[in-house]
Image (cartoon, rainbow, N blue to C red; front, side, top):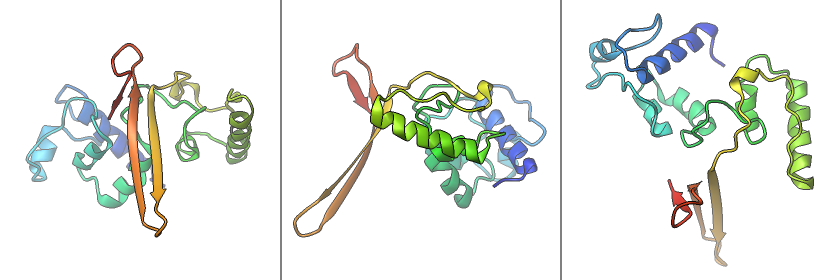
Length: 171
């Protein structure tokens, strides 16, 4: 829940972080703004290489980062959200999403995965924010429990690359 002013601020800060110019957007931050606030670096002028890089954005705080990070990835290499695989949390952030339509779609998608794996047609999500491309990056999670009750968990991101040996790389 950000206000529209906060949303504008973060969109401008993100755009200034990524763009190669030194022109500061209305609510954004380029090198001068970072240095004035005591940062030892300026805007990156490039894309994100990891989600944790969000912490470097001007005025990013721990609370906002903890809210955003679980819903983001830098590994998909897509310019949109694929509703067939996006989490409900991510789909809920799309503008104009009707909660009842979203809930119905999530239920239909779950049933489709159990049946034939073919996702249902997405409801009226903003088309300019969507992609139908399937990524080649997967999150793998495993948890082991010993007889004594000790637990170990591991999460790995794997990018599939069928034309190389081995045909995957762990990110």
